[in-house]
Image (tube, rainbow, N blue to C red):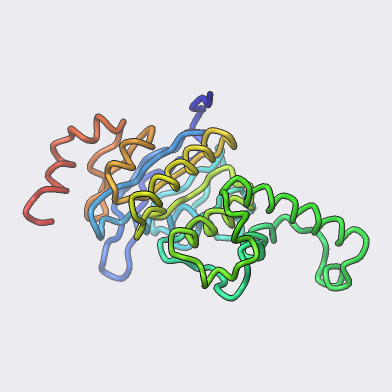
Length: 259
C-alpha cells in the first residue's frame, strides 16, 4: 500500500502573463510524493499553462518552482526531463508512421549513453544498451496490455489506444513525477475506465507521483488525493475531493452564469 510522502514539488506565487493577458495570478500549491494531485477548473482557467510552467515550457514572470528542495526561477524542458518529470499532452504528439514499440522507445532517449556512431554500427556496448532499453519498453507494453498492437503504426490505431501509447512513452522515462494533461479527453466510458485503472496502477505499483488535469469530475473525485481549483488564472480552492466538492466558490465557478 502506497504512503503519501513529503512535499516533492512546490509552486510559490507563480504569475504568468502573455502581453496584457494574465494566464496565472499568484498561484501557490504543493505536490506530495506518491500522491495523485488534480488540477481542475473551467475552460480557460489556466490549467495547461500551469503544467507548462512545471515542465519548463513557460517561464513565469513571478514566483518560483521548488523541486526536491531546489529553487528554480527558470526551468527548461531538458532540465525538467533530467530531473525525472515526464508529461503526456492534451493533443497527441506521437509519430504516426512509427510502430507502437518505436514510439515508446523514444521515451528512453535521455537514458541512452551510446553516441550516434555507436548506435549506427549497433555493436558492443551500444547493442547491449539498446537491448536493455527494448526490454524495458516491452515491460511497459505488457503493463499497458497493448502486446497485440506493438508493431502497428500508431496512426492506424483508434484514439483511445493512441492515448495509451502516449502514456507508455512517458512511462518509458521512468519518471518520478508524471504530468497528465486531460488523459481521458475524447474517450468513451470503457476507455476512461481502462485509463483510470492504469493511472492508479502507475501510482500504486511504480510509486509515481501524478499531477492530473481532467474535466471529468467523476474521474477526478475517484482518483485524486487532493485537488487544486483554478478559475480565470486564480486559485479558488485547494483540498481533498470532498472539501473541494462542497466549496461554494468552486460550485459558483462551475455552475455560475459566467460559465
